Amino acid sequence: MNIHVLVENHGNTEFEGEHGLSLFLEIGELKVLFDTGQSSLFIKNAVKMGIDVNSAHFVVLSHGHYDHGNGLDYLIDKELVCHVGSFVDRYRKKDDTPIGLPLSLQEAQKRFTLRLSSAPMELHPNVYFMGEIDRKYTFETPAAFSYLDGGSDDPILDDSAIVIKTELGNVIITGCSHSGICNIVRQAIFITGDVRTYAVFGGFHLKDVNEQVKQTVKVLEDSGVKYIYPVHCTSQEVVDTLRLQLPHVVVQGVTAGQSLTITTR
Image (cartoon, rainbow, N blue to C red; front, side):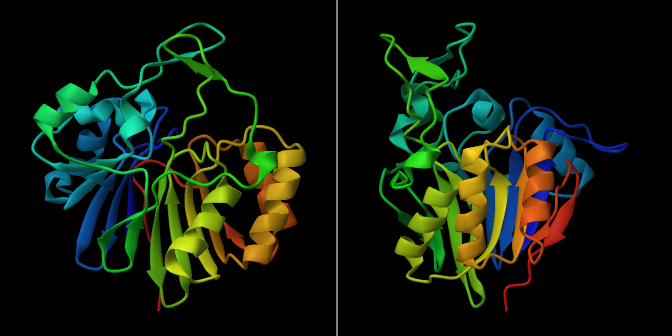
């Protein structure tokens, strides 16, 4: 399978970056646009990479934050897969800034064919939208940094991911892992029935090296993962720690405009 990074926090001399994430996945004959960043940059970079985002069979939204879904404004008439909670209004606690999608559920229903699900959904043979993640690892439940209309804490229940069942084990694609990367790995096993984790690509929402990171390293080590590609909302300090603490795992960052192939057989 091929992963093309359309948007990531870091760019390079040829491709611009922005705070956000957008990936174009080629999984055999299946093409998936996974998240759209916070602007039209994902389209601009895709054109440079020779990718037609409109060729995607599905658009999958990992969760309803602006830096993953604002680019939806530049798409129409696509099949959009996400959790129904992706369209709630949400605000950052520290400054009351809106951090949700400008697109309402009603507007999305007009623009797209919506496939809303809190349960796992098979998109294609052995390719699954993971639905609402069961949060069993309590160390992955940090204090809420955002709130919903009415002032209640926002648990970001819409946070989801994709898992691909392959001959070598599960390949997991995440947006931000607000539900916890270890919880996501656990749910991937439940969905596919395969206890092997082969590769994990995406944002881990880990900023500081703390007890959560220590516990995360242990779970990832026990999972037998071979490749980790931490991007977007994963600090360099955490990436360095993963690389140091998991010496038998390939830990590699990527930037906007890069493509990589994960060999799964």
